[in-house]
Length: 88
Image 1 (cartoon, helix red, strand yellow):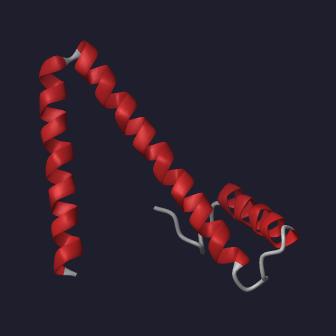
Image 2 (cartoon, helix red, strand yellow):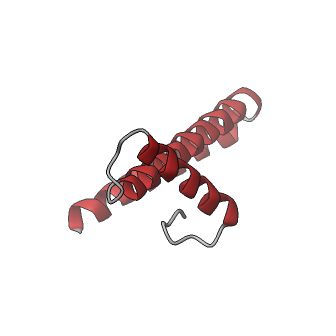
């Protein structure tokens, strides 16, 4: 899971470079790190969504029986997540 205090050197390098670019474009120094982190986080979410979509498409095409089960798991995970968000 992504964290601003990650020890992953690649993520840290990306965060530092993006922060510098955002500052260069005129964003105040105090906001740039948060903006950079949110951009990286959103990109990571987009990547994971694309990965899941591609995996489900492959299952649907080649493993229809597994695809049906996978959809149930995805839906159950969504419902559990929404429940946790609502409950706090």
